Image: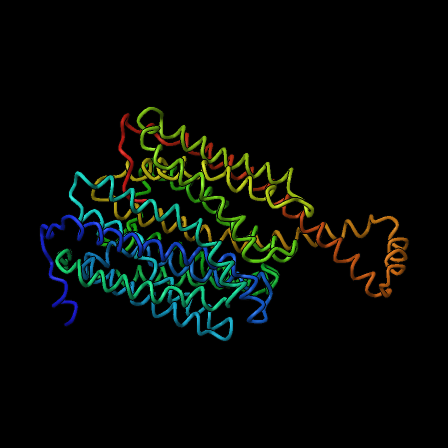
Length: 516
């Protein structure tokens, strides 16, 4: 086979040096960058996608949740796949599949087509992030591992800066289809570099049995959850027997999944790692903090575009500020971890993002300026940098060395799935809250006849005047609903920050973990 000729298992791997090592590192980091870019670039484009496919904005978020849940299924399987088939084979297959489904996403003409292809994109994109870490650590000498991880972490920070700007500009000036097409030429270049530079770094393969039952249970309960999230708002959630059925199927098969994986000798997902208090607590804090954070970066650009008439480019610029301080602060985090308890850094980082949520709740309004929106985005970046690396270190430092890969996969699984659930719940809450606030405002509005008369005096017909008044009320109500949302986010961030103190204190001078 082609892969057998190109990628030969070598233990230890052939060492690269000089320019070849640098180019190989950049190629692997670029893969991670493309996957992360695809997540952030789509958030800003949701209104354009929804408009182009003639669906509502809330329905358009299926584009985000479908990818996230598909990715969540694959991430915890990465360890088993790389051991069974080889890290390079899995990596190249994932990259090719991601490129093909990116092309298909761009060619989609209906929402069901796009959602199906986004699921395929997520299934192939899921393993890329952990595999880029694995391969970077494999090709770089041990003494250069910190620099290799710094290169990898740089893509994690830079992608959220470039993604919203690029997504907004492409949507405004070209077409939303190009946010997917843009992946294809980048992946072709990366594949050329991979085939040229990394032929002798394949890992040895192990004939591990596949836990078919566990995999089937995982797909069923996550799939049922995905359908529930996608159709929930449309079906009025638990007022629908169909949604109740999906919830029951997901809950029942999740229970079977947990029981099976706890008793299986070679589980496809090793959930026994939750016996470690540090890992369990850190994962809980990560899922809560990231889910709340991720849902906000979905809602904010939608609000700016649909209610405040921001272009996708301007909304992207607002969102991009969140990466600036993160980029500046991240290099100092390892030194801070040597001086302070990592739990304190996590508490301060998540707590700071909570303060920023509170700041939004009290300063954002329908009449706020660009910088009123951009400043909190800028400030919260420092909090993201402070909590991500220490939280990962506490999590992975709490498990046995042989459990590290499984623990990293499960933590990423929880983070990704939590983001998908939060997006569905928060967009529903946001829309319902705006409608409720609009009804209250309309009921207490004084002087409406006089306002209509004034508008008529400016040349508006009666119907046009009522339309303008209704639009103004809805705009203000959406702004109030958004501030209510950030009040709830503040409470969740406080809880996530406080939960980390349940974790045992990590050893002093603990080194930052490689797996983010």
